[in-house]
Length: 140
Image (cartoon, rainbow, N blue to C red; front, side, top):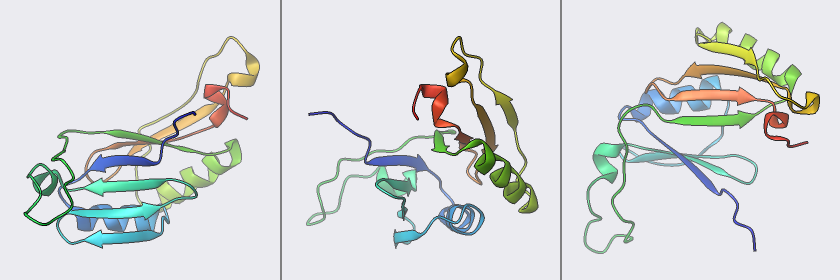
């Protein structure tokens, strides 16, 4: 039995700005939302969950699902998989939306097959978002 990542979580106090960014700029389909608490986006076999830490740091209300309190402050990070040509397309799309590219570079590697590019930018909450070629980790 091998574990796999099912959910990736970022935190943002302004969920309206986060929803607009992930839905309108990145084109992620909104899966569900609870105003003031969270927004969820469904990717192929994974979920991107964005929680408002002001809401999720509190214990659950009586009768609610017993999800333990959680939350984080400060910028988090998530990396989306993209081919080299997709990275170029994402760069153009982000720039057209007024999103600044914070960094863009090729990763050094001892094995040529593991060299790949990444671009980094920020979401409205200041989270560090990356698009990278999977081969930087030795994936196809």
